Length: 359
Image (cartoon, rainbow, N blue to C red; front, top):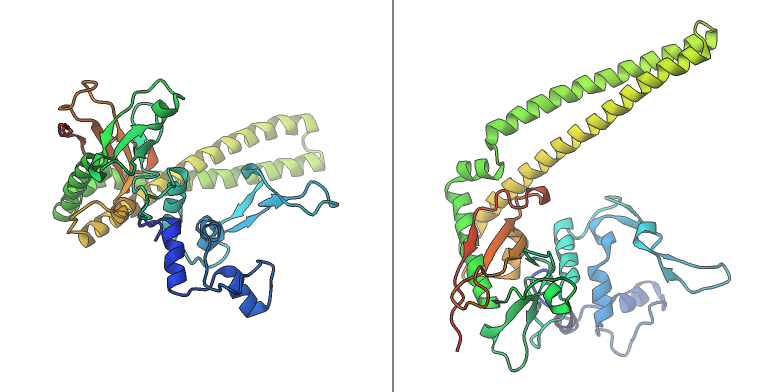
């Protein structure tokens, strides 16, 4: 629900209406535990902090998270939140009940603006929209006296004066039109011309990708073979040293050279493995994007679900003519099939539409 743009207050209301037991009451009814201070007079009452904690619980995606809290002394009962660098996370230790992609999407929303409007709806662009110049988030401005069609986004760096950026003023409905038009174009391209789309998404085309795989796998086998050979050489040298066939000084000189070569080969092997993993991930992202494009043919309006499924990041640039009401903001859209290192290469197209004149 949260990933689709429903705010925490509205989620609480829905859970209460459907008579879903909150964790504290459920624990009391099943185990008799009162550690969560269950309110038995209102057994179906949900509070925002409970939902917020559930939405950020990484254990739901199958991970074990250790050392989230610590104590300054064994004499003190109070537990303090640990710094992120001191928390240990072990991935995929148990069965997940939430897929990792949806979980990460929700965390992106938390990183952006989290305040829902009076209808309990979230800013659908939270976690997606950024300033093209300074990299700050763009924040939505709305209010009781502002008509929905006049809601606008502005650069967060400009608002807080934390950067020397400009406002990057753009209306929400105009941004919706640009993103939706571009999304329809890209998904139609993926559906109707899958081979061309695949070649574009892989940048160098399928032939180049196959060539890379063949070369990388062959090089990987050769490196692994040489690393094993060096292990045998170093072991033989050590036996020669123990038996006295070579001096300790000679052993140190020869062994250090082989160990240096081995370290360089291991580093090269890691680099090749990471590149292969990156290609595999790109392949999965492209295929998933093409499959989703077949499922979402009708797109009457831009929804949080469409953003979640197809888009990774949106960048808004300042108008070429500052303060102009006829000149639009250049918009760059990074899609889900593009890995982070592909930023800007290619992003299908850079779209520029005029902002309608206002009274």
